[in-house]
Image (cartoon, rainbow, N blue to C red; front, side, top):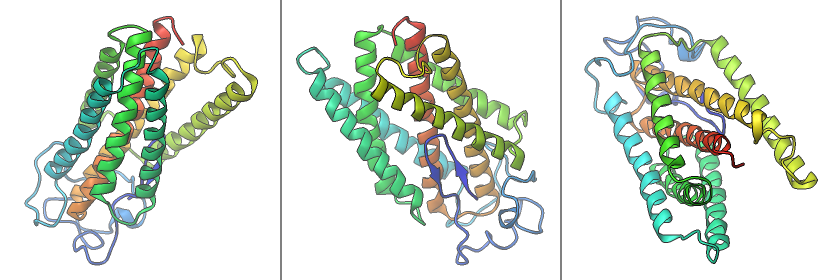
Length: 287
């Protein structure tokens, strides 16, 4: 299976012949025995283990929901821990703002490189994923501190609560089957994400070379509109992540693939948080 998010295109669950039950028939209690949908349409509707629902007995070498929850908690916990440490240890007063911001940008670039390396690796690397989370946390900590200090105190809490609300809402809607991840849904989300990213890159280039706010996609009314669109895209990618997890459990993906699921969820949640932070910044009257 292949899943993606607004920032990175990452490998999904592997189809190595050595993992029994993944290229062949699904496990007992999973989808009906037949052609593995991973070999044809990875987003075809199917019966099987629902996200958060009861699981069939599994072998110790295959992925479970508990594995995904544990790895995601470790990855997100690393992000939060390093964000808190960078908030405390990297001051953003007038005398230290430039230095702290430079460290944050450097951490962001390292995190991007690490995430791209993982995206193109054949197998999940826990060390690589946790390193990405650590550097991403440094960046988020400084940016959040700057926003809280120079925009409005409390905006970071709003962004965190908003991110949690989106996650809970999408998870609930997915479990209730109000959101159905089909091939058409996947194609629409990917096309929308590509268009969104191209517009943001164009806006950044106009801002760098033309000065001002570029095309105005990140401030004022347009900024609010594109912030909402970015959050909606993040919510759609959460649904793709949930589908990836559900299908991986149902078709006996190897246990180490739970790190890929954790990586994907973390990247998507970071995306949503950044869009939330920018949106609340604009709504506070500061760009």
